[in-house]
Length: 303
Image (cartoon, rainbow, N blue to C red; front, side, top):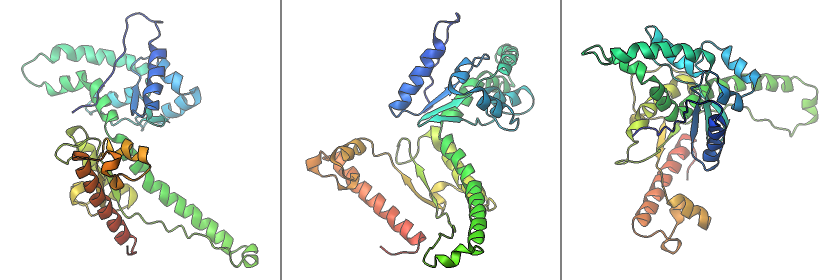
């Protein structure tokens, strides 16, 4: 299964492509569909519709980050491979991979590899380059958002804890502390107890192929970025003691539970949970009970 790609193109300029995509993207996002807009026009008019000039300049001034589409495919022009894109979060469920004028130079690379792809051998590189647009779209459309958030989480928490400790020390040495003996402050000793995986779809109770490679990277990223520990070999989420659970998609149970204002595991036949739905309700009850018990054990309290 691959991420569906909707492409707009027209040889004539000024026919409203940018405006059409801009409004459709916002509409899909408002309907709770996760949308990634990828600007493949070197003029980057669509990018300018979403980001102001200061934001675009700020992204451009980070050469080590892959914040523009061209920066993702540029390594292919040398001896490198496609770089993972860094998406701009525009709004809930709405993301952008900006375009830039340098993308026009990549057209020469594409043209050069077009005839090479018809050779009898050494086809990987030509095909990798010719499919690079699609490859980046799949990378951006997969569950990369959670992985990027996970990479940022650990350093952010460590910085916050350090800054909070400075404030605690400042308070301890202040003259006001003795005036408010009953004023307690949190010590800021947050400790991660694990992570959860979210299935985007279910096939034999396992994530579909399109998301497998991202799910498999979570254990290593969690150890390195959140726990600040060395990565010890390759660990799958199902074998990772830090993975608390994989949350399934409960599909039609979610709107049913919302309609009746109750958790999905409390739905009854009177609510419409009959047949396969009734079995799913019982499975959900077991899943959430197991998760609650595991979290309680990690937090060292009994239930």
